[in-house]
Amino acid sequence: MKIQPILLTLALCAFATTQIFAQNNRNRWSDGEPEQTWSVGLAPFSVLLPSGKVNVRGEWAYAPNKSLSLLVGIPRPTKMPNLLENNFELTGEGKTVKNRYTSFGATLENRFYLGSRAPRGFYLAPYARYNHFSLARTTQNDENQYATTFKGAINGVGLGGAMGVQFRLGDHVTMDATIVGLDFKWMRGTLTYSTNDPANDVAQFREEVQAAVEDIPLIGHKLAAAIDGDQIKVHTPGAVLPGYRFNLSVNYVF
Image (cartoon, rainbow, N blue to C red; front, top):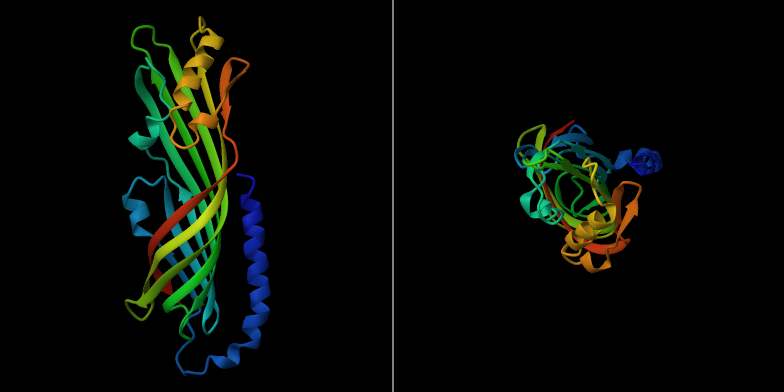
C-alpha cells in the first residue's frame, strides 16, 4: 500500500495550512462556551459486521463552521463474503482450508457546517478516498491433498462529496452520520492463482483460470489470464467506477 505515505503527507499539509487560518479566526469563537475543536471516534458497525476493517475517525474544527475529518479503516482479518468468493473459484476445487479478507481505507474530508457550531450540525464535505482490498483463499483436494491458492489485491483512489449530520449525545459525546457519500474511484488490481500439484499442466491451468475470471461481473470480459512461471496472473485494467459510502460513528469531543 505505497499510497499510504501520500495520504499522510496530504493530511499533514492540510492540517498545517489550516492551522494558520484557524489562528487568525480564533476571535470569532465568542459564544462564551468552552471550545471543543477536536474529536476522536469509532464506527460501531465496522466492529460488529464482517467488513474486513475497523473504522476510526478524527476531526479538527479549525473554524466556526469548518473542519477536517479523517476516517481510517484499520485492517481486521475476516472471511471473504461468499458472493465475492464465488467469483474467483475454479471448477473442481476441493474444500476451503483458508479464507481471509482484509480491507484498508482512508477518507479525508473538508467539512462545511451549515451553522457556526462545528463540529455539530448538518454539513457538506468534498473528500478524497483510498481503498485497498486483500483476498486470500486456499482449497485442498480430498483425493490427492494438493492445494490451489488464490490471492488478490485491489486498489482504488477517488474523489467525491458527502452530506451528513453530527449531533450531541452529551457534553463530550456526539454521533456522526454520513448520510450519503458519492464518489468516482479509479481501481486496479492483480489476481494470482497457484497450485502445489507437481503434475500441474500450466497451460490447462491458465484455461481454467480464464474461464473463471470471465464470469466476474462488469469487467470479466476484459480480463486475460497469463502464465507467470508456475503461477497464473490476471491484471485487471484500470477503471473508473462509481462508489457510495455511509458511515456512523460515536465520538468523544474535547
